[in-house]
Length: 341
Ligand SMILES: Nc1ncnc2c1ncn2[C@@H]1O[C@H](COP(=O)(O)OP(=O)(O)OP(=O)(O)O)[C@@H](O)[C@H]1O
Image (cartoon, rainbow, N blue to C red; front, side):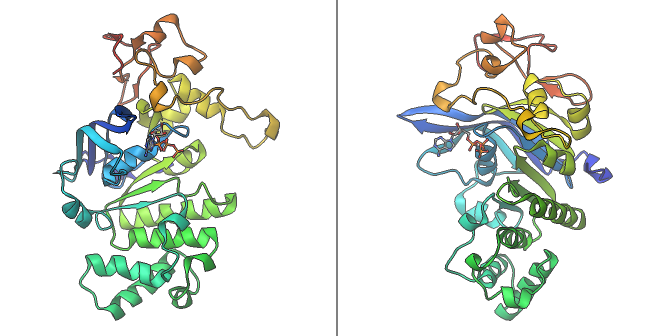
């Protein structure tokens, strides 16, 4: 767990307020991110967890303004990066921030790296876009960056193509590209999911080292609570487009409150457990079109569900010390009947 004390500073590098991101399906708008608010402080690593389909990627694409143009759009809310509103920013302006101030790495580097260009070309492109460097300087800097992410023959690798590298090496290259301009915020969307366990650990260690060295903030999107325990300061648990629990990493692991968080915890493989004993949560996350109109969205799968959970919509309420939970089992002084907040 990250014990970086400066993570406790009060200034917010990123502030997301009441964000709603919707997709148009058959002419109707559905919220994939629904009234989501959170902050990221300088040097903080904030984990966003939840099963597939909970809205983690749509949330990160909204922050980067990379939603698929024809279907997805930010319906309401604010995204404030270092005091600047991104949600209203023109594409041209956001291009100056993307890659330079905020970078992103994705699960599968093959889809982000261009197969027809060399690694060096792709690194140099980012450097030349955002810095006043000659080509020779950019190439030299690319070699240094590759070295800094643990690539042993960087002078040779700059002239190689993505398909010539292993998955772990490609992810190191993606990290090199993402940190090329020393961004202040890195959004990592399942950065190690496609890798085998040993390589996963190496990549997470590398990200942690770079984060500590550069002092950047990180939003780490994962479905893996083991990764969260290893890396994060704060954790946001999402279910069906909403935040259901938000707290610091120690509290989440020692005092989880939401039944969904507790089930995610139980699904973590234990060292001494036989594979067949591993639990997973029964049922699936509702699709956008099948989202319940009222009540708690997790009620159908919740072992603690009460009859009122079907029609009273819980709100994200503060318990103590910034621990927030959206569940009728906890203090819900003003639950909204019949309204899906
Ligand atoms: N382009 C799209 N058009 C319509 N619906 C979409 C689109 N992209 C995502 N969605 C829907 O938005 C919801 C949230 O998806 P999202 O990809 O953010 O989930 P996730 O938690 O990141 O899952 P995963 O871990 O599988 O990436 C899902 O119901 C998904 O089907």
